[in-house]
Length: 367
Image 1 (tube, rainbow, N blue to C red):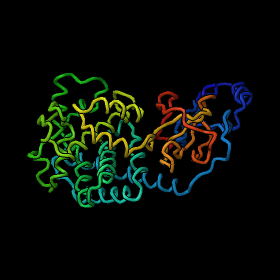
Image 2: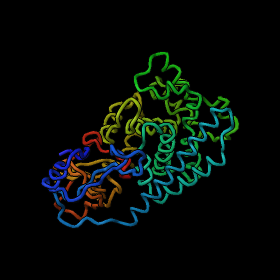
Image 3: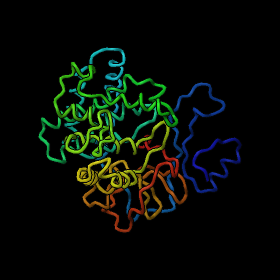
Image 4: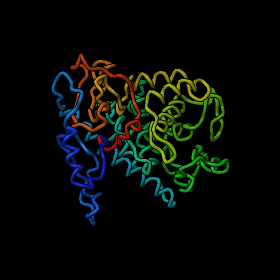
């Protein structure tokens, strides 16, 4: 039974009833008799599930509130990042007042809750990737710096550099920036020019600190010296510079791009470890993994029962996070969206992390 299809004849409804489906959602914007869409619903839901938990699934208002607050901040910060790149592209100065205000809101939220904003910011659309990537890297760098014990002042500086780390992309031709296929050697040379050095005129009026500049100028450098723009290596790279490379790669791997689907977090982290110590710093990569946890917020997991959920809270026990249940893999259909704290369900457990593409699940619709 497909979870989305066009109702073309009356007998289709009979088939749906016989399949045991108790409720469906009609997306009238896709109807053949509708001129103008007046519904944004795109998900077919079913209340019944072949695999039921041993207790009633309840919602936690506090988690819901934090998810919604994080979602609003990510949307707002993405617009600021878009404005920054737009201003630079038009030859204007960076609006540092708006930048610092956004950074302040991000650092305050991360200080209270180091996981939710990081998880929400990972859910991106490929069309808005460039701007949302800036926000996600900012959230991750803020959480990473906090985890490593940097001072509040240092965290603010690092976060500012993270939000502006891709400022050079404002001058990258869109046909290269958004190319759906592999870049040619010539195009890659142009793409690499987005990684600016400390001397670039783009940064003249930003008043960035040394740590902020480390993030902007070193996020594509590598310990083995084969990175860019300057080919720095070993001790030439600062700790903040090495941190920015780890965060930038992780967010890129776990995001949907115009030329690739998103990697599942554990797959990305496993590969990143294999790239140490040449491409990434080993000790810092290990600490980054410990910070994120076994199942990072925003991960999609398959349960033993067949239910599928998004990790929305690490939970008190490392292997038993709080989930937002959205799908039934056994019946291959959506279920009524509710929260499940695995620590309260001894008969339930995570079977494995999965990729949203496995069941064609659009994560953005559920965060």
